[in-house]
Length: 410
Image (tube, rainbow, N blue to C red):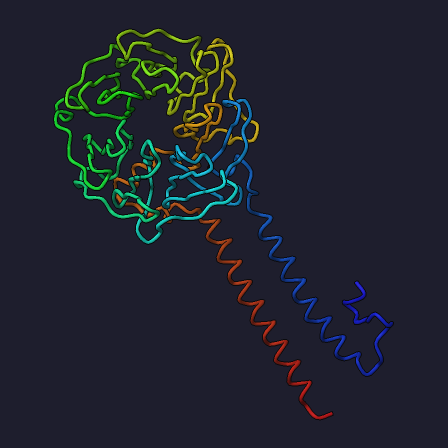
């Protein structure tokens, strides 16, 4: 603390410098008080722990251990994440306020096309070769080629979109809009309606079968459905009813004919593209959990499930389930899972502090997420701004008086 009292390296200052020492002490004391008050205000807010925010999390051992992959972002709602198939360190995440990208596996992030892509991003996809990326936001569908995002041509009913799926060909994408299915055959530049879905019902989940030309799996009106012609016609796969509707459906990269699904909190699997199904293990601990993502080992013994109640894992084929809590948010919603195409043990999960249904409703209605900010947060932020302004004014006044004293005749 010697510097505060004006003691130099050669000992105490001479008496003629005492006034300057007092002025320095007064300015530093003022700054110290401002820092203390700001610290007290900041301490009233929650720290960036896993239970206070949503965000992106990564596991390198198929869900056994998880670490935060978005340190410092303080995300409210992470909605979807995808991994570049040609570069595992390149990630895109859709949030309630646009897209973020990372080129180092999540150690740092940067916003993309903030002036173009606005609002909640529920759907993202890379082409199989990683050359193209497409996204669906609250204000449109966009395509990135050569690191530049451009708006795609889509019908109005495509926005907002529930899902984007890359087809087996690099230039084909499927887009699930509010009530219709769309397809693009030109790398996401334009989209057209796939006829027939309106007569069937409401599609809520979509997956493309790896290695197939036109085979799709979907959830339509709570039932698992299969299409062999790119979504133009569908057959009932015999899974799901009013008592136990299908939540989601997922493919398996290691087994091209395998399809995973959930119905009534039970994990079910088909090894023949939906012709037959069998249950895996026991029901999830939460009977009303709504499943959004499934990842499994090649032999089906290790299962990872994301849901609106968090993430569950089983290492014995579903006979026992453990809710993962270490380093993960507790009691907030988890979204779709994403696996690294180059390493099946690497899994990404996204969490949202705001319920996904609410984010979807606001996207449909064009609501402003800023209206959701808590009054206490507004008061705290306003108080901090006022404090900074007052502190700046006092500091300026102090410096002005000091200069006046320095130039005044002795």
